[in-house]
Amino acid sequence: MSDLSSVPSAAPTVSAAGLTLRYGGTAALDDVSVRLGEGVTGLLGPNGAGKTTLLRVLATAVPPDKGAFTVLGNDPGTSAGRQEVRRALGYLPQAPGFHPDFSAFEFVDYVAILKELTDRTARHREVRRVLDAVALSDVRSKRIKKLSGGMRQRVALAAALVGDPGFLVLDEPTVGLDPEQRMRFRELIARAGEGRTVLLSTHQTEDVAMLCHRVIVMVRGRVRFEGTPAELTARAAGRVWSSTERDPGAWAGWRTGTGSFRNVGEPPEGADMVEPTLEDGYLLTLDGESSEVAPA
Amino acid sequence: MRRVTAMTRALLPPVWRSLPRRALAAAAAVGLLLAAVPRLQSGPPDPLVGLYSLRAAALVLALGLAFLLDDPARHITSAVPVRRPVRVALRVALVAPWAALTWTTALLLVPESSRPPAGALTLEAAATAVLALAAAALSIRRTRTTEPGAAISTWLLATGVTAALLLPPDWTLFVTPDDPHWHSTHDRWTLLLIVAAALAARSVTEPLRGRPFRRPSPEPL
Image (cartoon, rainbow over all chains, first blue to last red; front, side, top):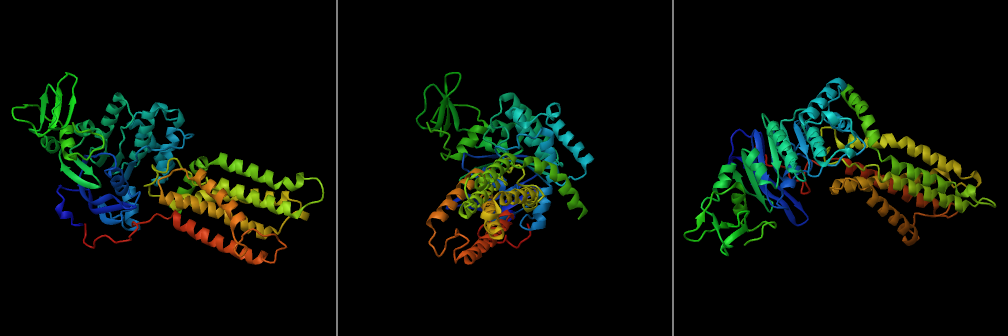
């Protein structure tokens, strides 16, 4: 499938059609078509769903076996097009690595040079700007190996933000952060989403609920849902209920802090229905394919 | 052109700082120590000791060069406009003078009377070094590893030992200068160098399409 007209979204800045990528016999991406517009789009899915592969393809880190995509009107299937895409791209990979002996400033400066910012004065101004944006100005001369995990993530985000890219690809940026750091990161991502396209891969449904205007759910290399967070939440309407005992008919159920059970699935007659969350909608969209959720 | 020059000049300091200097320094130290073995020996100079000392030194230098493409920040810099071949070429250019100087010193450390033909041994050393780089480049292209150096140097050491012990006489790469196959063996070293260089050049390029090399649909997106 490579007909983009079948993919619903208005004013796309990133369009992908029929993306397929195989590792051995396994399809990491299987005919994936998406359209992204300005703002933050969340990418949810269980481990091995193909989220990171999709992000790597859209970031031009790896070419797809099949399919095509454009970023801000440029086709990375050509050498010149790929250069243009990379000029417009900020990429924060999963578990980013650093040269540990570089300071935060030196590392972001290095990435800035790789983004073709050759004028030293202008480049240093830009590096200071992005370090300021991620609140790292105070520690900019500190060696990266001496920074905390959260600070390193912010260094990586600063590197992604260098050059004011129009398309920002963030692969699980809040993983391993404590709640306060995660909240700070949310602020940064929300700000980054103003006026640019941000694709945010995450396992945190809260991140999606708080940040994203659209959400994509991937399962086994395919897009299973694409829409707004409200639409994903609405999938669970009438399918979440509370009970005093674990309901064997529920697809998933767990004891909450109040002692009652929250059940997701097809409710029995007369069930005490509760307001669904985005996570409920997500769990129901997975439909038993997540390795992380044990059915009740 | 001016832009490329400016960018290259700007890249030199951070690329220099990101080189695996510890691995390279250790390889140089051990390599020179091995090359100095004939001088440390008492008695008349033995050409065989000179030959094997230099071969061991060449292998150790190649083991160090296997770390040259190690880049812990690889994933962050995997999608930047400056192309990978440029970055790799810069690393090689920065290390090439060091490698040439170390190898020349190693050759000079072996007494002239026990020194094997320098050109032929330099060919062997160059082929081994380029093979190490090609393997590292291939590993980076085919896997998501950021630091292939340790694995590639282990593989190179195992391959070197296996080649020395197990290759049949018609295919052997390690003969002595008085062997009638010395010249034909070095034709094989030349072939190995060419193949390794071609593999390295191919591996550092970034493919535009995936493995089936299928073009996207011709319709405009």
